[in-house]
Length: 350
Image (cartoon, rainbow, N blue to C red):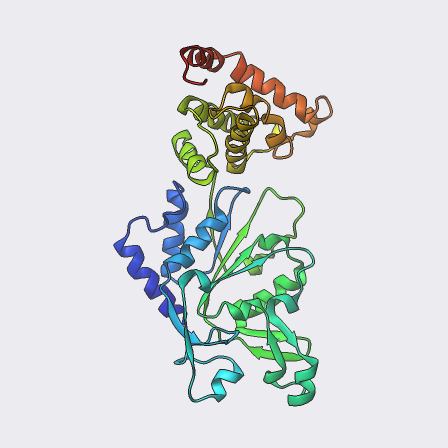
């Protein structure tokens, strides 16, 4: 049950100061999540794309120990606490081991997601056999599969209002209504959702729904050192990248995030993309070491769709020209280029 889940996490949180090893930095967000989970609070993680919201949610699931569940059960019932009609009717159950990460059920929020996708639906064949209002005729949706685990709802604010209302009923009344059919919601789960507050193509979350959650905020990496570690940890390694070039790439991305002319900022994925594409450019040019030109030739391809200019600038200059201008002004015409030329002459970048 939820109490058991929080008790399992409590032991881990109190023994380990930073159990979220898949995420570097984000100390404030980690502390907030630990605090909320210890009190069985549902959580929404709010932040821009590409900063690790999904990774952090998966890390929570990885902390959960494995449990014994009824083999083949869609609800992940345990023999001790059966929830679904099938498991309730049986006196003896075959069991299987369910690892922590497999207790993580993901739902991707989108405008075409239906209540039936989330909660389930009536199987017409089973309805003929057991009766239209029989619980045996009900086919569970993903939310029921999160029983004894974590329901991760990515981009919750992209869901239609009707689905939000059904979710509100589940969280408040612990009952799911599908048409004229009521299903008691006895499952035990931790609900972790994410929202991107900068996304304009979304539905407004109602105040009554938000009132059922605590919100934890995540931001871009706190320092350039943390960002460099993330780039190396998450990025593919095909060629050698000097520490100076790595710093230069991270510096440029972080500089763009501070640019007041940008409406949409580049995420950590942009940093990783620049790191990976510079390596592939080097390989295609017959080199095992990345040079400055390899980065320069990848900048527009990596960044042009990941940033957006404010309207006041957008109509005066294309995004491609803006990137070229900023790269030249902040990188090529500064100490970076001089230092890199010195490195290349000394043979470090050959």
